[in-house]
Image 1 (tube, helix red, strand yellow):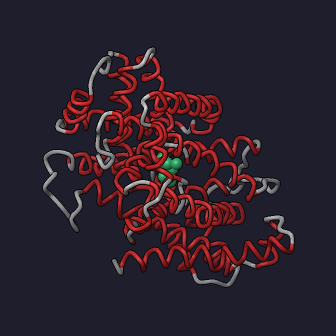
Image 2: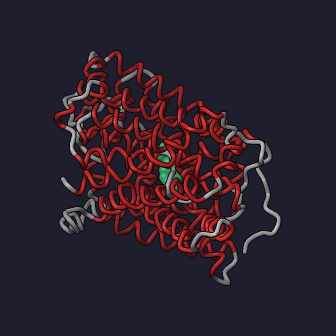
Image 3: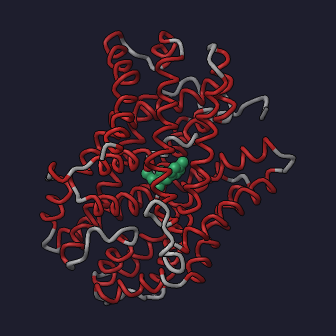
Length: 448
Ligand code: PFF
Ligand code: NA
């Protein structure tokens, strides 16, 4: 068992910052925009928003509650709560699958973190200044085609993550989150402003918010739900682990709302910044994982002050990616540390090295292994798709079902400060709507 005396967050603000640091990352800017583009726009966005509100919010609250009540890491917290409420130990699987998901996600997340580092460097050297769409595309294509360069930056990113986690200075990052997060929001707004000058802002708005429901498929709905889980860091045990440091006085519903609104606003701003550039330059919205890397440099390369803004943007993106990546490595390290004689530093090195090695397979999907497909997907897409559309929703489903059905209803209502009316609403959502929503999305996609 881990620490006997479990420390708590020094203040509510610290907790919000840590949760926001995990939530806000590449998922909001890189993954959200490329998924929207690939899925054809507004129908995806609206389903995603619905999933965030109806499924994401209750699951976030459920994960925090499990962590706070269990006062332990996800696996032990589930074990403890299951046995004290007379449930089977099999609930610990929710914790285990969360750790597995974190491991798999970090492997490809680090590759994209590496791209962000590489683009930070290239902003400093002025690579993008005055470039057109073709040359920006060629720069990105050159990166993808060079396994050695990809490996270098993946390694650099992963080394930073390992270094921070091994030193246990994670908590020290909250001060930085507090200043850098607002800076990221401001920069996104500037980029949206640039989008408005392209003359294609209206087109982007329509693309993102005027749905063509006829084009909606089961797979797109599943992808939208997966994005909701990914972006909120749900289904990975991370929010459970954070919840274990949470004091009794923190209002779970209110805090969840704050974190979710921040995360969602950043994602929507990213879309509103990127799609005007796509349409203004005749680029393809369905470009895939490279979308932000072939659009934003165009904007930075052609606006006044673009060099400094580009540098700031990629630095902030890298920082946001780092705080999320750290939260992904933490549960892996804790898992290794508890089940082996390794010290924290050695456990971090071992866990980090395993993640790094899997990341190499992910980055080779863009070049030497691009023909190597499993279920029609390359290794990168397989890792990304399998985790976000299967592992995360299943783990999150476990968390919400456990809280809504297995814990004492009165005590849950008390913990959430629910009045009689809101208690009914909460339990209808947590018991039926959210779990059935997840299941229906699965079934719907299986039926094609
Ligand atoms: N939520 C992060 C993002 O949107 O970039 C990614 C992430 C972090 C996913 C931590 C999962 C996680 F546990
Ligand atoms: Na996010």
